[in-house]
Amino acid sequence: MDCYICGGEMQKIKKDVEATWKGRTIVFRGMDAWVCEACGEQAYEPEDVRLMQGLIQGTLNRREYPEVMNVEEVADLLRVSNQTVYNLVKSGQLPGTKVGREWRFFRAQILALIKGENYFEQAVGLEAREVEGNAISANNTETIQRHLAGMGS
Ligand SMILES: [Zn+2]
Image 1 (cartoon, helix red, strand yellow):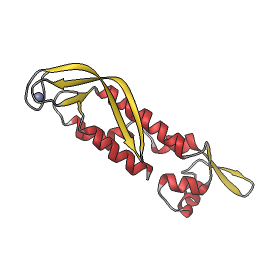
Image 2: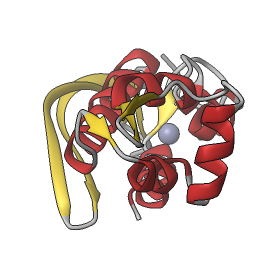
Image 3: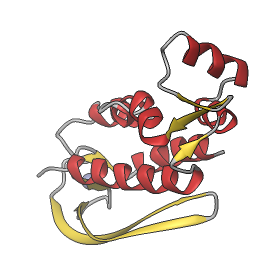
């Protein structure tokens, strides 16, 4: 594979990749990476990037929210007001279950609504796909981390 920056030769190596947000770090050991011998540019395989994104996102979501959520937690997750959550559930746009006088929501159902297959593609993939060839630049891990920081705050 030729380097898309300088046209030099890129070699495949094994590399540890770190992703950090809110002071927490995940390390992926032994990921495949391409490194340019001439300019030092690094790139990852798109499927590896998607794997890392999926694992990070799953870890983040599991940490932040319980399996059964209340209105406040759903509002926080969706970044809307409690009233909007009530409106959405009453109009049938949000799957909820009434327990006594309170609404409860299954985290998996709420996440499924907002996390389509292309969720991260939309967030970080467009920039990456503009790079010629089919590898994703290491610079995009910064974009991924910025996105994660936004999600978790
Ligand atoms: Zn290069």
